Length: 407
Image 1 (cartoon, rainbow, N blue to C red):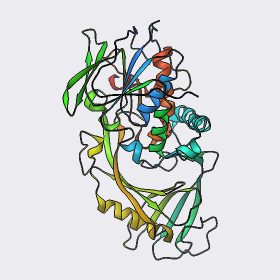
Image 2: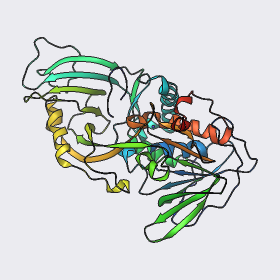
Image 3: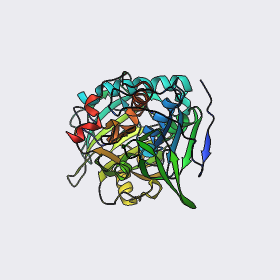
Image 4: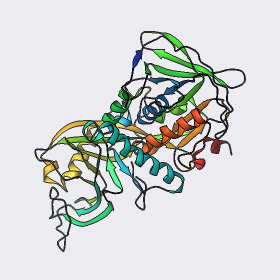
């Protein structure tokens, strides 16, 4: 999370159609690829979104509810929220962001709240406001003085400092996988294709023609499109080599406890007996506690999110480290050991959101790093404005324009 403290590490029922092979019918859209000058067509638009994570799902949701009524197809290789969007912590922060993403973050934070209000997100995906704390402690060394405001599920005899990073007015949380699944269901007339988007096909004038999709049990199929949005996280570069995205693997665990805990998200600094300082993050949810550790580059990004490898040793170390600060966590039952890959933009701050240089009618949204959950609704809304209205009006993200890669 990014703040003064830099860290690692979102009413109409839908008509959803699951497609395995058959391509969508062709529709027509004429436009220019500049970020703020899309020429609208009176015909309905045929938009293909690649990526079933939180950015892709949010984009598909807002497109499907736009008054211009575009025909939206979502292509996902594994399953909805199979990657980082299903395994992230889910922290939302209003004001922890730099100048380049501050406007996006404010918009997205508001959209998280409004979506939760509209679709009962408190029950369906665990949306709630919470207090965020920084906790310092030393294993085996009691503090020299009593520390105030220690949550009652932590060991008071090791906590030496409690600092406030966010209040219920500025930080909140969601369960990312549940959010994605719910918002996907609330999309209108959205078509889902489970297949691997292997290639974007262009006309001779660089205008998009469609997407080639591979299936496990059949020949590749061509899916026609007037606009393509690539929201494939760390897999984006495989479709768009001119959008450089790096990635790191992050491990996490979930724990079931016998006693509910207070809604305090914790950023910890734990000095172990051997002198090593570890910094796990702890996010209590309504029905479990989530904890994550450091990132690594020890395993390459696989072709599919479902094939991500999990180093159980790293997961066990997360449990060992957080047990220093909480007996409740030490005695809890580990219900999941998991890993995912986070996407990072290699040039400039923040994600890349907008039209792809050198292509016509191809947009990208990637590189959100640990802020994908927080900033996905805003990203989806802004891309919908760009595609359906010709300009982005709800936030200032000019510095995130992918054209920065060609400057």
